[in-house]
Length: 385
Image (cartoon, rainbow, N blue to C red):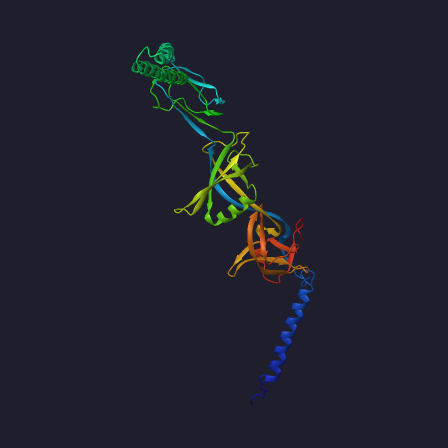
């Protein structure tokens, strides 16, 4: 006899969905319980912080309009000393590189031959003066005889002509004496300017010829000049402001000192160089401390005028984008605005803003890379914020 049993039926679809909902509910509850457990961290409810930035202020002040260039220092005057006569150098009155004053003895050339020539000229003049005096007496004597018809007129004319010739001879002798005296004076060469001597090119004992070799070169250092060139586009402004008054020039030599050497513009070239499109200028400097030396290179700043009431922002605030230059302006609610600007001159770490920013507004000077328009910022301590 067969045993009779019951057959198991599969769960219905409704029962399967009901079980799946139960499993999902259990997972959600477990997740919430895990989030609220002591080991979990609840989501933050604090508002996000702003981008940390450094900000500065746009200020209004007077800005000098300047032109910068590289210049070369030149001696105010340079004299190449030569001899006007020939002879042996008997004495050198200075040392190489020595400062000399105008009138100081530099060289002495053997004066003996020229002194003898002067004495000969003076003797010849004295002889001719004696002859002239005698001829003049003869003229006076014959004049009285001619009036009495005791001598022919022709003889009187010959004596008068001889006296006139001797007068001319005396004048020539006087010129010869002066020339000999000048030649003798050339034996003693004196400094024509105050300056500093260079290398001694001819030593004592050498024989020199007239106007042949340079004996020494003297450079005048006080005052001194700096020559520099600027683009021709500034020529009109330079001429305009030069007519109104003295233009200030500052030179910064490479001597390690921070303060510039003050001077004034003293020369404007008479032509623009067509090859470079520049105009040559020169500034004169007192140079009492001798910071400027001939041949040096120096940074030159020419101040044309001073612009009053210019709006200036720190140069670090200027950014360049596809549409041109702009700055991030900080609003009162600490959000930023990207504002296009028109920039001008740069002076002492600041840039003149011709258009776009008003005096008193705050601008971002550091941290711009993380900013977008309307972003919130968090000014760092110690800045303009």
